[in-house]
Length: 190
Image (cartoon, rainbow, N blue to C red):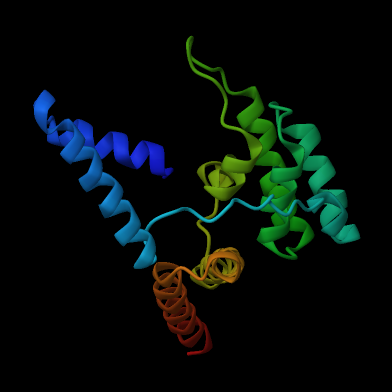
């Protein structure tokens, strides 16, 4: 939050009478300075996001399957982020990829009610919507591997955010996430 917006919010919330406005302004400015001194004030300048070409990061096997998925999925928007989600699935068997592609084709053929739009490929993959079309229930070991992949990717993201900002709350989230990963790995190994 900017200093200007902070001061405006403090004054707007206190609704001082006209004769008290100058005192309210002084209070808001003093509070801002104190918060900055304690490390809670001014935002850090934002850094440009690191962008990756996820399509280039796909293995040859993943790329071939992703291209087939992209051709089958009806909504052609945000291909790079869809490729990121495909990458996060990890290396799957040919049959597993085919199951996803078949479900994407079925999703593309599904009528959409008026006023609604189709889910973008990125969200469709993240939410594992192909399972809605699956004839066979997914076995627990496969679900566990996919969940571990999701948690590891979330950990990578949080660690890069922490590296940039050193926010203590992120460190707490990272610790919890590492514990979840450890717990899931112990379930996988047992």
